[in-house]
Length: 395
Image 1 (cartoon, rainbow, N blue to C red):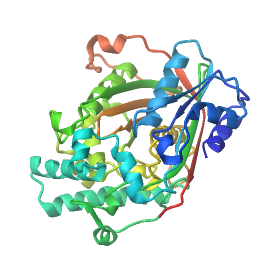
Image 2: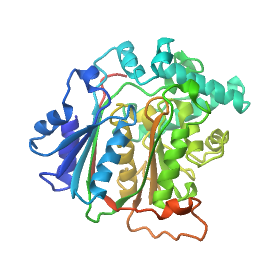
Image 3: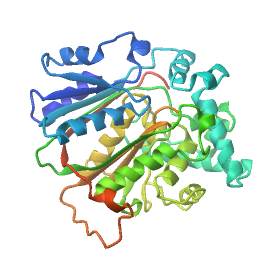
């Protein structure tokens, strides 16, 4: 899958070789039993001799490897680089896959039985209590996220789940960890994505990148209803891009669990704390809303091959910016898009902003609330070509 995605990206970019390859996989050792994976992929692609480096930032690995490649080009040392990410998961049992993914959780919390769905469920319960949401109201909000993203995924030929679901389907689905049902959780997926970054002018550029971390242990955090690492990463990305949240026209937001989409839209500054669910109810985040969220179907419907998801989000941003998302899914306003990727349980997060190079932005006085941060060195790195491959073996 990774070789197919990479070959497609290189072919579209009309390149036979690149200056370097940056590869993202989260846990290839346990998932498929291979190590030294960067060299293996380079050999598979017939590019022996090209420097190849592996990057891992848990479930934000796809975004993390993109960031690493970005700085390689921005340094001026590299002209063209291939960014490649993927994961193979479906051949293992759900129990084994869950165990592997849980290794990203703090060891002491894991020892007491913490898993990703369990911690996400606790976050959802805390959010409901903090913002006075009754049980049935929370259930309805989470169902709306799942229904929206499945509707978007239905239109995406790369999506793992190309089916529309109803509220009744949602309510009939299995309870995983209260209040999260099966349709609240992203699936186990096989997938790969690839991009070529270049220093040459192209129609799309990288405007801003932000990356931040938080404590490994959830119990040590200052908030259970917000991810500070998202806020910090967003602050840095907006500062580099000289943009505000209100300038973003659409976004791919990490929705490994449905409550994370709501929290993510608040942490990114699109809506105030406790108000993200209201925007959903008002239709703001729908495909034809004012601020479409997860037009690809998100991790929830497109799928979540953990190493590839962060880069797949950026591929979707590129499709939209280029007008290549297809008639039914193409957004009317697609000049500036944002991708938000969560690593682990919200503690290694990245925010990336891409925009069309032919857009005309007018920076108003006082529009950028970041002080001197907005005037820091800002390199230009362009998106050359992209490719996405998803192979689905599990319903």
